[in-house]
Image (cartoon, rainbow, N blue to C red; front, side):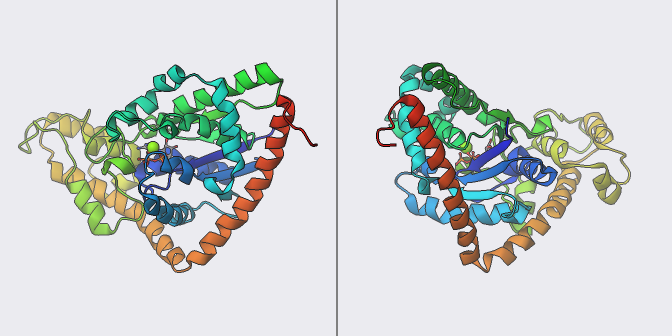
Length: 347
Ligand code: ATP
Ligand code: MG
C-alpha cells in the first residue's frame, strides 16, 4: 500500500501552540523522515466557511497567514504539496456522493461536532454545511487516497467517520477507497493542548491562544495571566500541579536542557513539581520559567516568518503550483470513483 500523507488546517486565524504540538511537529517529522509516496497539506477554506459564512474576508486573509506559519515552522514546499481546498472543486463532488452513505443521526452523534456546536452561535439553526463537514473531510482525504493523517485528538471522530464511509462505499461499489489512519502526537499532553485560560482546547475560535507569530511581550503577558492553583495564595502554601495550566504546559514544552539553562537548582520537572506540591515555590518562578522556554521556542519561528512575509506573491505561487498538482490527482480519482459507481457515461 502506498504511503500518502494528508492533513490541513482551517484558515480562521494564525496557527498556535496547539497546532504546533498537536500536528505540525509530527508533520515535520514525517517530512524529514521521507519514505512517503505523496504528501499533501490542505488549507481548508471551504470548511472554514461552514461556520464563518458571513466573514469570507477573514477566511481569505488567513490563507496567507496559515501558509506563512507552515513555512516558518519548517514545512518544505519541495517535499509537500500545499493546496487550497475550494480550488479543487472535485472535492465537492466526492462530498455529494458520500452524503448518501451517512445518516443525519450519525452526523448528529459526532462528538467533535457536538462539542463545537456548543461553542458556536448558531441559535439552534445549524447550517447543513457545518453539520456535514465531516463528510467533506472524508472527501478531502479519499480524493487523494491518503493513508496517514497527522492530527490532534479532536480529529479522531472525523477519521472514524471517514473510515466508515470508505467501508460503506467499498461494500456497495467494490474496492475503491483506502481507509485512512490518524497519527497522534507522541506526547499524550499534546493530544489536545489546553488553552491559556485552562479550557479544554486551545482554539482559534475560543481566543485562548499563544500564536506562533506572537511578539515576545504578548507571549509574556499570556503566560503571566495563566491560571495556576487558585488555592496557592502564599509562596509557602502547598500547590496542586494537576489542572494547573502552567504545569500542563511545562509537561509539554520543558526539556532537561531548559532546567540546566534556567533552573539549574532542579534536575527535572518531577523535582519542580515536588517542590510546588510541598510548598515554598511561587507562581512567579514557574511562570518565568515557562515564559523563557516559550520565548526560545518561538523566536526563530517568528524571525523566519517575518522574512517570508516580505514576499506574499512567492507564497501564493507555491499554493498555486500545489493546487494545480492536487487538482489533477483529485480529477483522476474522481473519475475512478464514478466509474466504479457506474456513472461514468462518456468514457
Ligand atoms: P478553529 O477554532 O477554527 O476550529 P482550531 O484552532 O481548532 O481552529 P483547526 O484548523 O480546526 O484549528 O485544527 C487543525 C489541526 O490542529 C487539527 O489536526 C487539530 O487536531 C489540531 N489542533 C488544533 N488545536 C489543537 C490543540 N489545542 N491541541 C492539539 N491539536 C490541536
Ligand atoms: Mg478546529
